[in-house]
Length: 178
Image 1 (cartoon, rainbow, N blue to C red):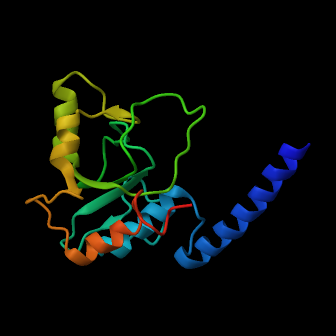
Image 2 (spheres, rainbow, N blue to C red):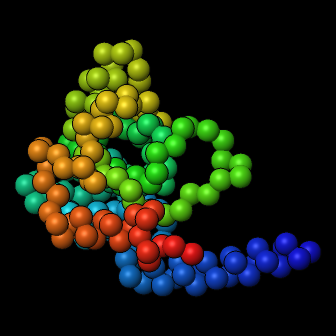
Image 3 (cartoon, rainbow, N blue to C red):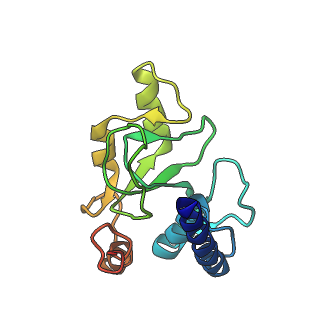
């Protein structure tokens, strides 16, 4: 009974926080919507008006389409679509092996950002006889090559201001320590 009371109280607290987040972003405070909003704020992505547009969350200023993913742990898996966007922008929490969730937590943090060329990653998967779809296993070398934050990547410059914004969401941010 005590555990149930504690959980009920925490859910009520979470609902209040989710309502405040929803008021800020204009959509439900789900990881996908929050990730889209964060990406739009940091990278100037113009989000689609309708959040249910298949495979595309928005566009970069240069017109390239992008699908934003926020994975609370970076497990080497990427949800892809056959007829997807030009790019996948992945906000990722700490690296972790794909494993069961019992006894773990998935805090909402951004420790790294990866920018994948959708066609290139799909081609690489097919060349290895892999399917393009949900939870596609992407080689570690591709994750490393696609990382634009915190490492510097010559294919996509992340400004100091963008780095400052992303750092506020990192595992080591003083704002996130309990």
